Image (tube, rainbow, N blue to C red; front, side, top):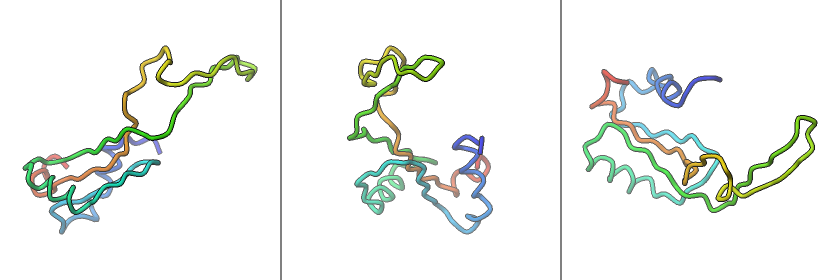
Length: 104
């Protein structure tokens, strides 16, 4: 439950012994991604991993509240006073096991 993404990807290693490449998706979002094209692109790059990031189409808001639960304000993340990443991650990964077996 408290593992980071790398630890979770590594946990599936035992199921991938005969695979050269694997894909993983870790997100609550959706993307219109043609997986065969993404896989071909990945193979041409000669890298050990790829990560897809997409800009969300939804709006997100931060809710500020007091300790007793009373809401004091709501603001869009574009106006928030805290650091918010420009993109919410649709976490789609491709990893090459052939090039990274010692690291994975």
